[in-house]
Every structure is written in C-alpha cells, then in structure tokens.
Amino acid sequence: MLANGGGTQPFNENDPQIRGNSTAPGVDLNQDGDFLDAVTLYRPNTTNTRRYGLITSLIYDINDDHRLRGVYTYDYGRHRQTGDATFLDIEGDPLDVFGGKDGNGPQVRLPDGTNLRRRDRFSIASLNQFSAEYRGDFLDRRLRINAGVRLPYFERQLNNYCFQRDTFNALCTTQAGTPVPGRPGFFRFPVSALNNNANNIFGAPRSFEVEYNDLLPNLGVSYRFGESHQVYAAYAEGLSAPRTDDLYDQIPVNPEPETTQNFDIGYRYQTPRFNLSIGAFSNNFQNRIVRTFDEAAGLFLSRNIGEVELRGIDGEAGWRVTDDFTLYGSASYIDTEVLSDQPRGLGLAPLPTAGTQLVETPDFQAALRANYTLRDVNLFGVQFGNFEFGGQVKYVGDRFATDVNDEVAPSFTVVDLDIRWDLQSIGWDGSFLQLNVTNLFDEEYLGDISSGSNRFAVPGVTTSTQSAIYQVGAPATVMLTLRARFF
Image (tube, rainbow, N blue to C red; front, top):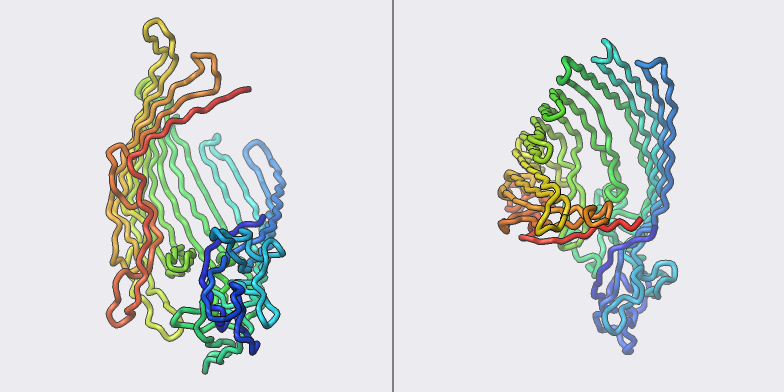
C-alpha cells in the first residue's frame, strides 16, 4: 500500500541543505540562470506499507462444560517512509502526488549527488503472540470462569538515513554539522527551510532494534442467579508498544510501552422487556500515551504523560415499553488523575502535571434515545407501510484540553432526530428512505480535541506554550439517505 500526505515548502536556491557538502553556490530550481530565488516545491511524506498476518487457534473440548483454547498470532509490517521533493506545474499542482519517489515524478537533484527529501527511513514491525484460555461452567452452568494468558513479543527494526530533530522532523543533508559538546552523536546545523527551529540540534543517522514483551494474565468470573440476574468481575493486563513513528527521535533511548491493569465488577438484569447493567471499573496506566496535533508542522505527535489512574461507574438500561415503543439510556462518571509530572527533555524542568485530570476525558456523559414504530400507515386509501421515528439527546461534560489543566472545553448537549420509511410496502424489499436531523437546536460546541501541554506559560518552568487544537462540532444538519437493494 502506497499512501501519503503532502504539502509545499519554499526553498532558497542557495539553502545550506541544498548545497550540502559541495562547494556549489546552489541549484537553479527555476532555471533563470541564478541562485537568488525562493522556489516553492512539493514535499510529501510517503509511506509504502506491506503487511502480512496469520491467526491460528486450536480448541479442545474436555467435555460440555470445559474448554481449552490456544492461539498463535503473527503480524509483519514493512514500512518504507520517504519524502522525495518534486516540482510544481504552472497551475501549482505537483507533477506527481508521490513526489520524486522511485521515478513517480522528477527528483530535485542536488550538487552532492543526493536528492532533496524531508525524511528517509526503513522499518520492520513484527508481532509474535501466544495465548491460552480456559473456560469452565460450574453449578449447573450458573457459574462461568474464564482464565487466560497472553505472551506478546514485539520487535522493531529501525533504520534512519537522515538526521533527526524530534519524532517526525528530519534533516536529510550531507552538510557537516557542528558536534554538540557533551552529547555524542548530536550535531547543530545552519538554519535552512527544513531546519527553522530555534533548537536545531539533530541526532545522527542510526540503525537500531527495540523489543517489547510481557506475560499478560486475564481472569473473568460471572455468576447467574434466578432467571434474570447476573454478577461479574474481571481483571486483565495489557501492553501497547510505541508506534513506529514515535521510536524515531533524536534521543537514542527506547521509549517504554504503555501498560495497563484493568479491573471491572458489575451487575446485569435482563428480561424480555427490560435490561439493566451497572458496573464499576478501575484502570491503571503506566507510560500513558496521548496523541496531539502540531498545527504548525501539520503532524500528529505522541507524548508520554506517565502514570494515570481512572476510576468510574457506568450503566445502561433498555425498556421495550410496547412492541412499537422502546427507550434506551446510558450514563457514566469517570474520575481521572495523572500521578507524575511530565518530563520535557534533557536538562529541562518537568511540567507540573501530578494531580491533574486526564485530557479529553469528560467526568460525566449521558444519553437517552427513544424509538417508535408506526405500522401499516394508510393515507387516502394508499398503503405506505411502516415508519420508524427516533430521537436522542446526548450530554458531554467539561473536558480538560491541556495536561496542566489550564484550558477547558465546555460541556455541551446535542439533540438528533430521525425518520425511516420502510419501502417494503411498495415492493422494494430490504430498502428504506431515511431523514436525519443532527444537532437539531444548532448547538455550538467543540468536538474532537487534539490536546496540548499548556495553554499559558508555567512560572518557573517554561514560557513556551502548546495550545489544544479543536474540531468545531457540526452545525444543524439535514441528511436524506436512500438505501436500495436490487437483488
């Protein structure tokens, strides 16, 4: 699979990156006979991914009440990440959307024999995982026990052929950088189009491997009493290896994986007309990873916010009032706490995040939906069949948008309506016409959040800021959908 996201960048024809280690005055990008211009080039981030997987399992039924299962999972991903620049046509469009990769478009050749590019790396990500599970039923199948274990083995082989400033920003050049005192393998380079950051320290190209593995148990118990009642409890441990992109950083250390310990306990009640469930949970995270968007760079980045605790309760209930009228409601309350300050890099004071709440996590959410079916509608002697009317309201509480909790996305409530006409009555089986009205009262709210570290300067720690980026919620919208089945 070949995919990319691209953008343009003006380059001075005598840019240090373009000259490289040669003595040439630059490259005449616009062919006007000098090296004095700034020319806009197309510089995509292109990824070529080849991925293969295998899942196989073996099940042994000891008897009707006891089962053993073993599973092996293999996943292999080969990632070639490049950023070969190319030229724009007279209308400002790139000569090829994949830039100069592998002859797709013309490359920007440099005097030192290389081509202009924004990154150049090759990665292999593989997973070998073994897991085993036991399921047993006891006490006339009222008691069920599930016990299992997983052993994932993640391996990453990484090769970076350019100098690296941070997770995503590379400098592909043959320039001779200035060694940074006290930091072997780090260099400082002259400011250029792709090196316009005040902290212009880059780690040298390198090849390395990282491995992550752990023994992860899980246990679940449920007990059914009476005809409609059940209680349950569960415990599971998890491990999430860092994204391949996040491993490419100027600091030559292996980022720790995100690990979790999850506890759940609850009660369920179910009858043909009514069902109810309520549960409590506790999730402990180590090396919690949060994704954020760097608007200036146009890149999604990750940051490790350390240890986090989540505690809460949630519940849902459904009631079939009549055969044609149903109600459904859900609600949850979550209390979160970040337990440690957030490191900011070598020699820098950490952000004071200990005791703050987790970003993007509302403390309270609730939703209510109602559905009513009007059957066999007949107007003026014409049979129209069935109509289904639905309405829902959703409330989302305040959400912190920065790690130090100095910016908040306010709560909001959204109401939606929908009407569906079943077209079976006119001989069109499996088809319907549906009208949806979302955000009926045109509520203005902030939807998705790409959180930041701090909205304002933190006295005694940092004067730099990283605000959150918001996606504004959709306004009142009307949609008409026709689903047609022809066979």
